[in-house]
Length: 108
Image (tube, rainbow, N blue to C red; front, side, top):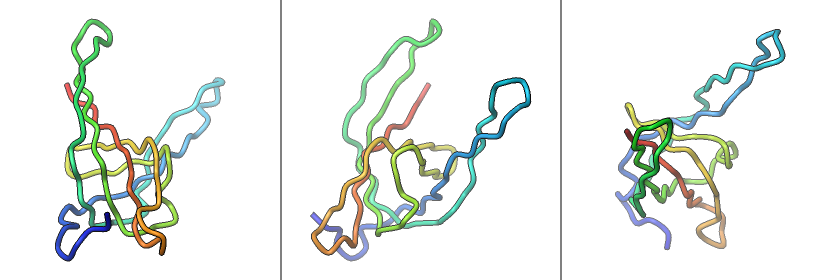
């Protein structure tokens, strides 16, 4: 279902990852902002897992945005301290005006 007027209330920054060689066989990942988009953010589910001896909460969201060429799996949306990693992207309507993104937010 496409969003109605006024439903895209969250201003998110879309970031893409870039990896730079560290010269020792590894790489350093950094994030580069590429666009500022208005979005609808809907929580979908929550689960917990143990990671390095601590509980980590994972929250999934459905993020709806107007079509942008850089939105893809592996990018992320940022809103303040929130980081929403894009896991999957699909067209929301036949006219390809909106994208629905399944995202995961890591919380401690």
